[in-house]
Image (tube, protein in one colour):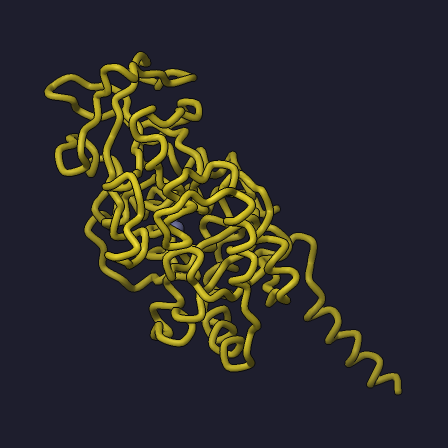
Length: 324
Ligand SMILES: [Zn+2]
Protein backbone atom coordinates (compact mmCIF):
# COMPACT_ATOMS: atom_id res chain seq x y z
CA UNK A 1 0.00 0.00 0.00
CA UNK A 2 2.74 2.35 1.00
CA UNK A 3 4.61 1.48 -2.18
CA UNK A 4 1.48 2.11 -4.27
CA UNK A 5 1.01 5.47 -2.55
CA UNK A 6 4.60 6.40 -3.28
CA UNK A 7 4.15 5.36 -6.88
CA UNK A 8 0.97 7.46 -7.24
CA UNK A 9 2.68 10.40 -5.58
CA UNK A 10 5.56 10.12 -8.04
CA UNK A 11 3.10 10.02 -10.94
CA UNK A 12 1.37 13.18 -9.73
CA UNK A 13 4.71 14.89 -9.34
CA UNK A 14 5.73 13.94 -12.85
CA UNK A 15 2.53 14.87 -14.63
CA UNK A 16 0.99 17.72 -12.67
CA UNK A 17 1.41 20.96 -14.65
CA UNK A 18 3.85 23.30 -12.95
CA UNK A 19 3.14 27.00 -12.63
CA UNK A 20 6.40 27.79 -14.39
CA UNK A 21 6.01 25.11 -17.04
CA UNK A 22 8.26 25.77 -20.02
CA UNK A 23 5.60 24.54 -22.40
CA UNK A 24 1.88 25.20 -22.41
CA UNK A 25 -0.74 22.53 -21.87
CA UNK A 26 -2.63 21.72 -25.08
CA UNK A 27 -6.39 21.10 -25.00
CA UNK A 28 -8.76 20.03 -27.78
CA UNK A 29 -11.70 22.43 -27.83
CA UNK A 30 -15.31 21.31 -27.67
CA UNK A 31 -17.68 22.79 -30.26
CA UNK A 32 -18.99 25.26 -27.67
CA UNK A 33 -15.48 26.33 -26.68
CA UNK A 34 -14.59 26.73 -30.35
CA UNK A 35 -17.69 28.82 -31.06
CA UNK A 36 -16.93 31.12 -28.13
CA UNK A 37 -13.44 31.87 -29.48
CA UNK A 38 -14.49 32.18 -33.12
CA UNK A 39 -17.43 34.53 -32.46
CA UNK A 40 -15.62 36.81 -29.98
CA UNK A 41 -15.61 40.44 -31.10
CA UNK A 42 -11.84 40.63 -30.68
CA UNK A 43 -9.36 42.96 -32.36
CA UNK A 44 -9.56 40.86 -35.55
CA UNK A 45 -13.36 40.91 -35.94
CA UNK A 46 -13.48 44.62 -35.11
CA UNK A 47 -11.03 45.38 -37.92
CA UNK A 48 -12.65 43.33 -40.71
CA UNK A 49 -13.32 45.37 -43.85
CA UNK A 50 -16.32 44.89 -46.17
CA UNK A 51 -14.07 42.85 -48.51
CA UNK A 52 -12.79 40.74 -45.60
CA UNK A 53 -16.30 39.70 -44.59
CA UNK A 54 -17.69 39.20 -48.12
CA UNK A 55 -14.67 37.18 -49.29
CA UNK A 56 -14.91 34.84 -46.29
CA UNK A 57 -18.56 34.18 -47.19
CA UNK A 58 -17.64 34.04 -50.92
CA UNK A 59 -20.25 36.60 -51.96
CA UNK A 60 -20.28 39.97 -53.70
CA UNK A 61 -23.09 41.18 -51.44
CA UNK A 62 -22.58 43.32 -48.34
CA UNK A 63 -21.98 41.19 -45.22
CA UNK A 64 -22.60 42.65 -41.77
CA UNK A 65 -20.50 41.81 -38.75
CA UNK A 66 -23.49 39.92 -37.29
CA UNK A 67 -23.75 37.81 -40.46
CA UNK A 68 -20.02 37.14 -40.39
CA UNK A 69 -20.15 36.03 -36.74
CA UNK A 70 -22.98 33.58 -37.42
CA UNK A 71 -21.01 32.19 -40.37
CA UNK A 72 -17.72 31.82 -38.50
CA UNK A 73 -19.41 30.18 -35.50
CA UNK A 74 -20.96 27.49 -37.66
CA UNK A 75 -17.55 26.45 -39.01
CA UNK A 76 -16.52 24.86 -35.69
CA UNK A 77 -16.05 21.12 -36.13
CA UNK A 78 -15.75 18.14 -33.78
CA UNK A 79 -12.37 16.49 -33.25
CA UNK A 80 -12.18 12.84 -34.32
CA UNK A 81 -9.84 10.46 -32.50
CA UNK A 82 -7.76 10.18 -35.70
CA UNK A 83 -7.37 13.98 -35.91
CA UNK A 84 -6.39 14.15 -32.25
CA UNK A 85 -3.79 11.41 -32.65
CA UNK A 86 -2.24 13.24 -35.58
CA UNK A 87 -1.95 16.52 -33.67
CA UNK A 88 -0.70 14.76 -30.52
CA UNK A 89 2.12 13.17 -32.55
CA UNK A 90 3.16 16.60 -33.80
CA UNK A 91 3.00 18.08 -30.29
CA UNK A 92 5.06 15.20 -28.91
CA UNK A 93 7.81 16.12 -31.39
CA UNK A 94 7.57 19.84 -30.70
CA UNK A 95 7.36 19.71 -26.90
CA UNK A 96 11.04 18.92 -26.13
CA UNK A 97 12.11 21.59 -28.62
CA UNK A 98 9.85 24.11 -26.92
CA UNK A 99 11.00 23.02 -23.46
CA UNK A 100 14.60 23.79 -24.43
CA UNK A 101 13.59 27.43 -24.83
CA UNK A 102 11.48 28.46 -21.79
CA UNK A 103 9.11 31.19 -22.98
CA UNK A 104 6.17 33.15 -21.58
CA UNK A 105 3.43 30.87 -22.92
CA UNK A 106 -0.16 31.04 -21.74
CA UNK A 107 -1.02 28.17 -19.37
CA UNK A 108 -3.15 26.50 -22.04
CA UNK A 109 -3.23 26.53 -25.82
CA UNK A 110 -6.62 25.56 -27.17
CA UNK A 111 -6.79 23.50 -30.36
CA UNK A 112 -9.83 24.22 -32.51
CA UNK A 113 -10.91 22.28 -35.58
CA UNK A 114 -13.02 24.02 -38.22
CA UNK A 115 -14.22 23.36 -41.75
CA UNK A 116 -11.59 25.88 -42.86
CA UNK A 117 -14.12 27.76 -44.95
CA UNK A 118 -13.96 30.78 -42.65
CA UNK A 119 -10.28 31.57 -43.30
CA UNK A 120 -9.31 30.37 -46.76
CA UNK A 121 -8.55 26.82 -45.63
CA UNK A 122 -5.45 28.02 -43.74
CA UNK A 123 -4.47 27.42 -40.11
CA UNK A 124 -4.54 30.58 -37.95
CA UNK A 125 -4.95 31.75 -34.37
CA UNK A 126 -7.44 33.65 -32.25
CA UNK A 127 -6.78 34.50 -28.59
CA UNK A 128 -4.90 31.47 -27.12
CA UNK A 129 -6.30 29.10 -29.74
CA UNK A 130 -4.77 27.50 -32.82
CA UNK A 131 -7.39 26.83 -35.47
CA UNK A 132 -6.73 23.87 -37.76
CA UNK A 133 -8.96 23.30 -40.80
CA UNK A 134 -10.33 19.84 -41.55
CA UNK A 135 -8.67 19.91 -44.97
CA UNK A 136 -5.23 20.51 -43.45
CA UNK A 137 -5.75 17.74 -40.89
CA UNK A 138 -6.79 15.28 -43.56
CA UNK A 139 -4.23 16.18 -46.23
CA UNK A 140 -1.10 17.78 -44.80
CA UNK A 141 1.88 15.45 -44.34
CA UNK A 142 3.07 15.26 -40.71
CA UNK A 143 6.17 17.41 -41.31
CA UNK A 144 4.07 20.13 -42.88
CA UNK A 145 1.52 20.02 -40.06
CA UNK A 146 4.37 20.35 -37.56
CA UNK A 147 5.72 23.43 -39.36
CA UNK A 148 2.23 24.92 -39.37
CA UNK A 149 1.65 24.30 -35.66
CA UNK A 150 5.08 25.77 -34.82
CA UNK A 151 4.27 28.84 -36.94
CA UNK A 152 0.88 29.33 -35.25
CA UNK A 153 2.43 28.88 -31.80
CA UNK A 154 4.52 31.96 -32.47
CA UNK A 155 1.35 34.06 -32.85
CA UNK A 156 0.11 32.76 -29.50
CA UNK A 157 3.45 33.67 -27.93
CA UNK A 158 3.53 37.27 -29.19
CA UNK A 159 -0.12 37.80 -28.21
CA UNK A 160 0.78 36.61 -24.72
CA UNK A 161 3.92 38.72 -24.38
CA UNK A 162 3.87 42.18 -26.03
CA UNK A 163 7.32 43.03 -24.63
CA UNK A 164 8.93 39.98 -26.23
CA UNK A 165 7.04 40.73 -29.44
CA UNK A 166 8.55 44.24 -29.65
CA UNK A 167 12.09 42.87 -29.22
CA UNK A 168 11.54 40.31 -31.98
CA UNK A 169 9.95 42.82 -34.36
CA UNK A 170 12.88 45.20 -33.78
CA UNK A 171 15.33 42.42 -34.64
CA UNK A 172 14.02 42.54 -38.23
CA UNK A 173 13.74 46.34 -38.38
CA UNK A 174 10.08 46.81 -37.44
CA UNK A 175 9.28 49.37 -34.73
CA UNK A 176 5.98 50.61 -33.28
CA UNK A 177 4.57 53.64 -35.13
CA UNK A 178 0.96 53.74 -33.89
CA UNK A 179 -1.93 51.97 -35.56
CA UNK A 180 -2.17 53.49 -39.03
CA UNK A 181 -5.67 54.10 -40.42
CA UNK A 182 -6.08 52.45 -43.82
CA UNK A 183 -5.91 54.87 -46.79
CA UNK A 184 -9.43 56.05 -47.68
CA UNK A 185 -9.32 54.78 -51.28
CA UNK A 186 -8.37 51.28 -50.12
CA UNK A 187 -10.34 51.08 -46.89
CA UNK A 188 -13.16 48.83 -48.15
CA UNK A 189 -10.58 46.50 -49.76
CA UNK A 190 -8.41 46.04 -46.68
CA UNK A 191 -7.48 42.42 -45.98
CA UNK A 192 -7.14 41.57 -42.30
CA UNK A 193 -5.23 38.68 -40.78
CA UNK A 194 -6.45 37.10 -37.54
CA UNK A 195 -2.81 36.58 -36.56
CA UNK A 196 -1.77 40.20 -37.00
CA UNK A 197 -4.88 42.36 -37.28
CA UNK A 198 -3.09 45.65 -36.58
CA UNK A 199 -0.97 47.74 -38.94
CA UNK A 200 1.15 49.40 -36.29
CA UNK A 201 4.82 48.68 -37.04
CA UNK A 202 6.98 50.56 -39.55
CA UNK A 203 10.26 49.68 -41.22
CA UNK A 204 12.89 52.05 -42.62
CA UNK A 205 13.22 51.62 -46.38
CA UNK A 206 15.09 53.22 -49.23
CA UNK A 207 12.81 55.43 -51.34
CA UNK A 208 14.80 56.40 -54.42
CA UNK A 209 17.97 57.03 -52.41
CA UNK A 210 16.19 58.63 -49.47
CA UNK A 211 15.46 56.68 -46.29
CA UNK A 212 11.96 56.88 -44.81
CA UNK A 213 9.63 54.84 -42.61
CA UNK A 214 6.95 52.74 -44.27
CA UNK A 215 4.25 50.29 -43.28
CA UNK A 216 3.17 47.17 -45.17
CA UNK A 217 -0.50 47.16 -46.15
CA UNK A 218 -2.49 44.24 -47.47
CA UNK A 219 -5.56 44.81 -49.62
CA UNK A 220 -7.64 43.13 -52.32
CA UNK A 221 -6.92 43.57 -56.01
CA UNK A 222 -10.59 44.40 -56.61
CA UNK A 223 -13.38 46.15 -54.74
CA UNK A 224 -15.63 43.07 -54.52
CA UNK A 225 -15.18 39.32 -54.22
CA UNK A 226 -16.23 37.62 -57.47
CA UNK A 227 -18.35 34.48 -56.78
CA UNK A 228 -18.19 33.51 -60.48
CA UNK A 229 -14.38 33.39 -60.27
CA UNK A 230 -14.59 31.62 -56.91
CA UNK A 231 -11.56 30.63 -54.88
CA UNK A 232 -10.18 31.92 -51.60
CA UNK A 233 -9.34 35.51 -50.67
CA UNK A 234 -5.65 34.59 -50.90
CA UNK A 235 -6.02 34.94 -54.70
CA UNK A 236 -6.85 38.64 -54.20
CA UNK A 237 -3.89 39.63 -52.02
CA UNK A 238 -1.91 42.72 -52.93
CA UNK A 239 0.93 43.91 -50.71
CA UNK A 240 2.27 47.46 -50.87
CA UNK A 241 4.33 49.66 -48.58
CA UNK A 242 2.95 53.04 -47.56
CA UNK A 243 5.55 55.72 -46.88
CA UNK A 244 4.70 57.63 -43.73
CA UNK A 245 5.74 61.11 -42.67
CA UNK A 246 8.32 62.05 -40.09
CA UNK A 247 10.57 60.10 -37.82
CA UNK A 248 14.35 59.86 -37.90
CA UNK A 249 16.41 57.02 -36.56
CA UNK A 250 13.19 55.99 -34.80
CA UNK A 251 9.76 56.01 -36.46
CA UNK A 252 7.15 58.63 -35.54
CA UNK A 253 5.14 57.64 -32.46
CA UNK A 254 1.94 58.10 -34.47
CA UNK A 255 2.57 57.64 -38.17
CA UNK A 256 0.64 59.87 -40.57
CA UNK A 257 0.41 60.33 -44.33
CA UNK A 258 -1.50 62.43 -46.85
CA UNK A 259 -4.59 60.62 -48.19
CA UNK A 260 -4.61 62.96 -51.20
CA UNK A 261 -1.02 62.07 -52.11
CA UNK A 262 -0.46 58.45 -51.18
CA UNK A 263 3.12 57.26 -51.55
CA UNK A 264 2.43 53.55 -52.04
CA UNK A 265 5.17 51.25 -53.35
CA UNK A 266 4.40 47.72 -54.57
CA UNK A 267 6.33 45.01 -52.75
CA UNK A 268 8.31 44.23 -55.92
CA UNK A 269 9.75 47.76 -55.95
CA UNK A 270 10.80 48.26 -52.32
CA UNK A 271 14.49 48.65 -51.46
CA UNK A 272 16.33 47.89 -48.23
CA UNK A 273 13.83 45.32 -46.99
CA UNK A 274 15.43 41.86 -47.23
CA UNK A 275 18.65 43.32 -45.78
CA UNK A 276 16.68 43.65 -42.53
CA UNK A 277 14.14 40.81 -42.55
CA UNK A 278 16.34 38.24 -44.27
CA UNK A 279 15.47 35.76 -46.98
CA UNK A 280 14.26 32.80 -44.96
CA UNK A 281 10.63 33.17 -46.02
CA UNK A 282 8.55 34.65 -48.80
CA UNK A 283 5.63 35.12 -46.44
CA UNK A 284 6.37 38.78 -45.79
CA UNK A 285 2.92 40.38 -45.53
CA UNK A 286 3.52 41.45 -41.91
CA UNK A 287 6.47 41.31 -39.46
CA UNK A 288 4.41 38.85 -37.41
CA UNK A 289 4.36 36.38 -40.32
CA UNK A 290 8.03 36.80 -41.21
CA UNK A 291 8.93 36.01 -37.60
CA UNK A 292 6.44 33.14 -37.27
CA UNK A 293 8.02 31.41 -40.26
CA UNK A 294 11.49 31.98 -38.80
CA UNK A 295 10.32 30.59 -35.44
CA UNK A 296 9.04 27.50 -37.24
CA UNK A 297 12.44 27.13 -38.96
CA UNK A 298 14.18 27.53 -35.61
CA UNK A 299 12.13 24.68 -34.15
CA UNK A 300 12.75 22.53 -37.25
CA UNK A 301 16.45 22.78 -36.26
CA UNK A 302 17.90 20.93 -39.22
CA UNK A 303 16.79 23.08 -42.16
CA UNK A 304 19.33 25.08 -44.13
CA UNK A 305 18.26 28.73 -44.44
CA UNK A 306 19.30 31.65 -46.63
CA UNK A 307 19.75 34.05 -43.70
CA UNK A 308 21.08 32.17 -40.65
CA UNK A 309 21.93 35.51 -38.98
CA UNK A 310 18.20 36.29 -38.67
CA UNK A 311 17.58 32.94 -36.98
CA UNK A 312 20.50 33.57 -34.60
CA UNK A 313 19.12 36.97 -33.61
CA UNK A 314 15.68 35.51 -32.94
CA UNK A 315 17.14 32.60 -30.98
CA UNK A 316 19.20 34.96 -28.78
CA UNK A 317 16.12 37.05 -27.94
CA UNK A 318 14.03 33.95 -27.18
CA UNK A 319 16.73 32.42 -24.98
CA UNK A 320 16.93 35.65 -22.98
CA UNK A 321 13.15 35.72 -22.47
CA UNK A 322 11.66 34.60 -19.18
CA UNK A 323 8.91 31.99 -18.89
CA UNK A 324 5.58 33.19 -17.54
ZN1 LIG B 1 0.79 33.21 -39.45
